Length: 110
Image (cartoon, rainbow, N blue to C red; front, side, top):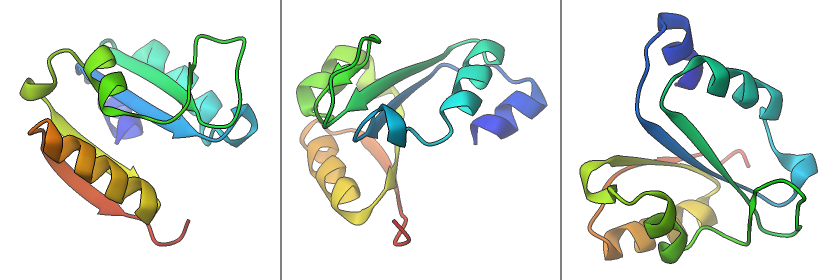
């Protein structure tokens, strides 16, 4: 989706909450860094669940408190949740608690 916006040269107000176990497992890290430079309004917040980082990444999992911290206007946004089933199930519960507008995609291939 982000590459499509980049190719169309569309600027959007997007906050990507991106959870990974550690730095080594950040999928598409270089691509995301590149896209962040080309899409005005794109902010990426990295979460590392099993590692601390020298970068300004959040330690731990995405929680309701972290969503509130990084997405202060959450009631005005649509949340797209993509990932392995356990992650998606957890995010669905959290986002329902805050009455967020949610679109879910399950990737069973994880």
